[in-house]
Length: 449
Image (tube, rainbow, N blue to C red; front, top):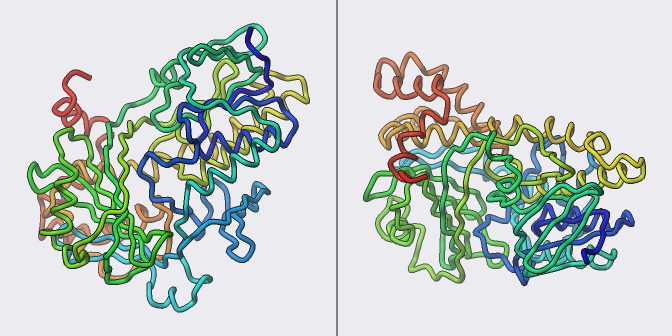
């Protein structure tokens, strides 16, 4: 016979663990289901970046209090203890494919001189963070079930029934926190109303013996693979574990043929950036495959609440996921106290999600995807060369897109005069829905989808 809970949470990543910890501390009867056996083990490549400190993000003005070892969320009104390793970084740099142009956000040297007060953000140990959240959840009475693969979920008269392997869990509410490739959104039909934008795949490497021109900076290189000329990107961030260690990301957009190990070797040995790598030693590596969808129209159906990446486009970041888990758990608590075990009871969360998440997803990430798919390598080299002054200091992807668009808009007459073909492709990006831009590539790379 199924055991009865106030709340069943599916997925023990940052969103699910935060929801479990919060609901448990509120006194709810909570079951947390996770398919992994070791919750704190990181299997998916992740920059482990605290995003973001420099501006409001998802309606929050969060920051890391290094003196007390606290992640602070003052708008929502909670903190999270973090006692693991971390490392500051002081800028964001975007390199052109040929390595000749670098768009800098802020003044790296000036910010670094300020020390902790000048940092753009930090990188940290995600596994350590998850371990702390799990400990708090268990101490608050949450029942944790690992190695559970959810096979079905359906609305019942008294709530929701969740079946995982040979076990059944009944909850008045369910929180689906099973990540960007959410099985729950597929089972419940959320994806039928969403636009599919494509699949991103990547490998992330932690490397020693890496020497960057500015050692504590977040680097993005938008480029193309050297065989098929398909769009890919490299990202590099400092590692929290050692001063000469960096996380190096190699990610492909909508092309199933790319050999990411070969692209890593190209970056290290033959690319315009090879001088940064002195026979680097890979200490560990992880991969990821991500399906990109438009945000759901509403993160609630039949007493199932979606949180974090399960309902969004791209990544809500660890911080955004924790916020949504915290907010959803409190909404469930209020709904139960008000004896409103329905949509009306959790309307506070739904309204917050629509205001904080829905619009930002499209604004933050999709323009960059459109550029990568439509522009050529020569286009990007040329456009980056036009942006010669530092952009405002920020880690916010939507602000980056706005600033670059503003500058390039001012230079449209020059672009039209010097590179009319580039201008034509920019206009195509501006006036064509993203799903139409990527449709030919999806059909070519995934003909049987």
